[in-house]
Image (cartoon, rainbow, N blue to C red; front, top):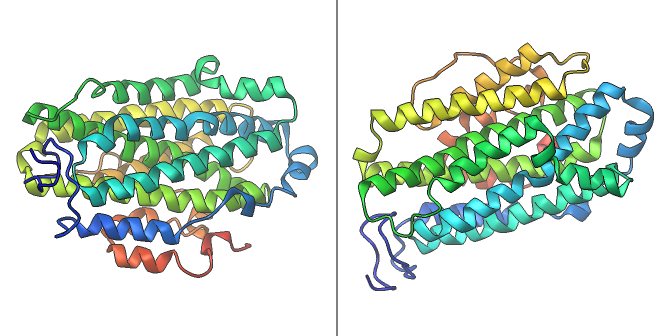
Amino acid sequence: MSHVQRPARLLDPGFCLTLRPMTYPVFYEMYRAAIKNTWTVEEVDFSTDLGDLRAKMTPAERHLVQRLVAFFATGDSIVANNLVLNLYRHINAPEARMYLSRQLFEEALHVQFYLTLLDTYIENPSERFASFAAVETVPSIRRKADFCFRWMDSIHRLDVLDSREKRGQFVRNLLCFAACIEGLFFFAAFAYVYFLRSRGLLHGLASGTNWVFRDESGHMAFAFEVANQVRREEPALFNDALEADVQLMIEDAVACELLFAQDLLGEGIVGLSLRDMQRYLEFVADQRLMALGFKKRYGSRNPFPFMDLQDVQELANFFERRVSAYQVGVTGEVTLDEAF
């Protein structure tokens, strides 16, 4: 295939460079919308967070934060590696690769944010090192990392998507990272952050999380639009076997996140129960499944009113909105950053 000729389908092998005529303008508009959402770590003010950690938080709450930042330490790096090693080389549209280039920048920005967070929150260098080593030393975090690596490795050896079977493997990786890792693991972490914010704690962490929240919503919207485009071009890939695999994948991700929740909440957090966290995970999992056109698995409702205050309704309707609506959403004030 010529490097400049347009492929017939999004996952056809090759390296298309032709932007005109533009076959997938939706990806270009997503790229433009992401540019409008540009932020920097230097904008985040952690000045009150240390006082909260030292004087306002219980040992159980500090344990929650320690485990949470340990997960943050490597979570976005895993996503970035999958983007570079698996997504970029197989999604064969230059406008889509423009968005992926922007997403890679955002993943690096998130890594910088969490690095700054750890350097701010954890003064002892050996404790900082332990946080970065948590994927090896903390069982609940290691299980989540193993889940990520298993799905990353599932297509690592696929050089060319030259068969329906290989394209099906790729779609499973795409949906796993969008729906389970960015869409469930990260959004569960956001819930802990916003719970603390609802208690008047860690405003710096919540402020930076507002921006990460928007970035991750965009990443999911992009991946799901890729999936929708592939469904239109190759409907045979989206069969009962794929839905069954995604349902099991979601179930595994919820189990991983519940183990993490048991760890975070094991010392007892007033106002945040393991049962409510399970219901929230099930609620988010169903949102992901419905966004993909699959059946709900759990039927749970969002138990956290503080997430409603954070405009978490975006979780339910983001994927049904046009890109132009998202562009409007990233202009002006950051509504998630308003005081209670």
